[in-house]
Image 1 (cartoon, rainbow, N blue to C red):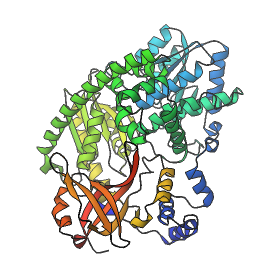
Image 2: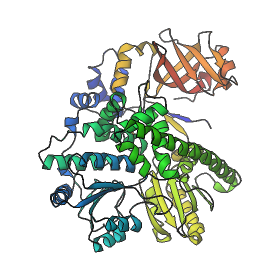
Image 3: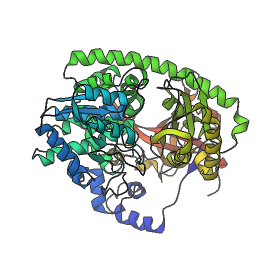
Length: 581
């Protein structure tokens, strides 16, 4: 499907800011526009953006209940109570548990960790987990990346003499659990200035608060855990803005220079240990491996990998997790094919705006979140994938399209649900099988009434029009300062119009489906190399010297010991076919 190109002019106010910032970048005028599009207004904000510092992080005690949480933890340590660190089985949850457990064990030995099993216990705090904690004498549970809706479970734990400190980042309900403390910047009355922390990020702030309250250098060993935090931020797809961007900046450095033993083992398996690791590497390689354990077996093994100090143990666990990941890939492929077949057989019923809601009794519930993501990306529809659960209910996972709040859409049907929780872009849910038809009907009505046409239309946002003359060493240095790239801080996309073939462009690939471009910008006469994957349909017209427009990102191409600049083409259109502006 061809994507719509969106290039919005700056407002008059934005243009004024651009002019003020452009003074700093006389050799690269487009940099000022990129900064304005990221909401930066002053030279000071630009400096903080380009050169993030851990000193810029907000005080953890700005978070509601931080004082209560720290006091309860200090009380537990002083009384030598047994403490359990409990978390979700996904990447965010397991990295959060590993971070908090690793930090606490520096000061306290009576602490252990626990990850519920997806099949037997399901998402969040389980009665089985509470019973196990009670059986071994746990008096305090620190729960990470879940728990904000566990009203009944925490009441049950309290009846057994167990307190909870909740560290969560999911959207809360009106009724909150009766916990000793709740750390969640999304609470309605929370004054913490940054709302989009990952679950691991909330755990990190808790450990900062604990260190500060005890007069410990608050960076003692916490900097050593920033690699875990970067993995959680990337894998959970939280915005790479503000505090997350600072934490990810330093976490990526740690991941590249001195990762923990477990992550080092994963990097070797993924063949990333000799290259510069990026957010994309975490999303597509590191994260899925860590996730595979919780999807196919037990997230407990992922935590074991991330907290071990033994290279030998790490290697053995990594091999086991890799086997899970291979099984996960096969299931993913099979279920995605089956889901696509269901959708293709009902395309006429979908209309232009209906969400995808599909159910199969036999699908593996550890895979349905991945499948929902693939369907949302492929069909540009909010997607809900459902399967039967061992507890007699149907469990589901949903993913949304850009700008559409799937959480609110699903919350609108809460009377049909047994449980649900998540974010604006992704929600997990459970319901009775007999409620599926009504849930599907209501969700379709809600989405059709609230979704905008552009949200179900594939599109590419263009940041700036660029002349090839501007692509030089200074430009590339500035591009590196925009890192790390991710949600809400995407890699800049540029447009250059009326390009022509230099005469040496050629088709490449096994099926000659890609174009290796040698393209000239007539406005300056400079030639650039580029690669256009899967765009061979334009080749003949390009070779016939027809002018064409390209949208692209600018990449460093590393081959052996040489570094060159290459355009990664995201779209081509023939200039004569372009719409009038």
